[in-house]
Length: 463
Image (tube, rainbow, N blue to C red; front, side, top):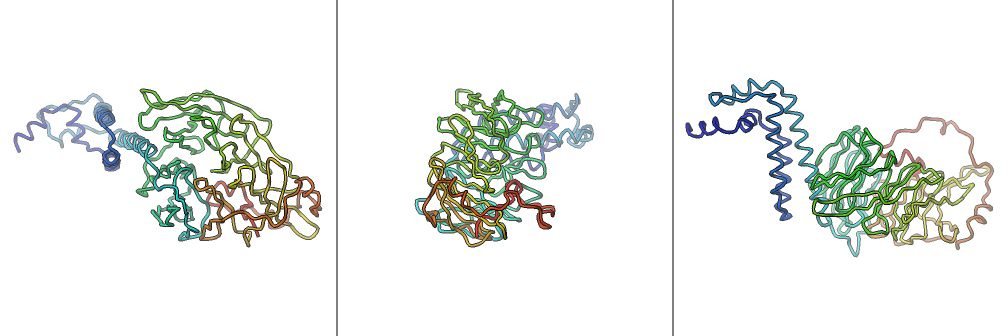
């Protein structure tokens, strides 16, 4: 015991300071979780371990404010000299965030959490009413969001893998292609969930609009709060690339048909970045920027067409963004007030839900729209207005969300043959394209759990 104590007393000052002021439990747990994952993936974490130890040394030097313990002083005496506990707490939080980002980088580069099934389960059942779904693009993973939980499902076996408590006021962000990571806007910060472990991985406070997007296996992209230029981060290596565009806010991110290129979709401006890898890690560079005449207020999550050539937005009707050129096209479907546009397994066909006002009532329409042919055909999919259509990109199938259940559809049958869209719309018995306000419409809408419902209030989608 005397020998051990003597060795500690003659150890480097920063080690003795850190021993007297132990690192916070959350930081220790984050480092242990990273090390376990690195071993499981046979990843050489030596460089990251060295940097972590260097940051621990900086912790001691910065928070001791010049104090260096005498070899005569034990831990209690040293601790009494370290009065800036807030500095240690802040440093520990930043360390947990730093190692959490590296953990996210490892997860992003990992294989799919579950393979894409050849024969998916016919339906998934949540434990409560489903408010929204998140679907991985290259994995057999679905996350059904309820008012209380984020429920992670295997699309092939319908097994519920995790039930993650929904804490605070949260909105969906982005799910990684491999189904391992989910970003959330939670209580004015950005939270990253590890979907396999069912635990939060880290919390970020400097993200504009709390929107963080996953960029393939390379990293993440967001707009920092104090700038208008997006920032790409190689999570595993910590390398950052500022994208020189004043897009301001990114509302959706999508892969384009060009290998390594990703589209950043904003309100009045769009951009594309090329992501590449060299000896220092991943980097991103601006490839293209456009400012279309048509502003788009809402880019629903996951609205990539089946062939990956276009993204479907919503601005008083469907908007089609060409992912090659970033040009926007908005078909004229007046007088139909389209509130929902959803991709289908046919890249040319969109499922639309809208309404118009007749002489006696507000009439709802469920339609299949051909973007190439400009035709419409009625579609009778669900039986209730509370049902909502969605699209699952990994299996290229549509599904109907109704209360607790998500039911996979074999197809989207039309009840009549497709006809020219203008001719179809002319025959609608419309009396007023803008219905006068009623007592119900004048009421302040109730808050919903997801921003997509707020931006798309008529998500009650078919009869």
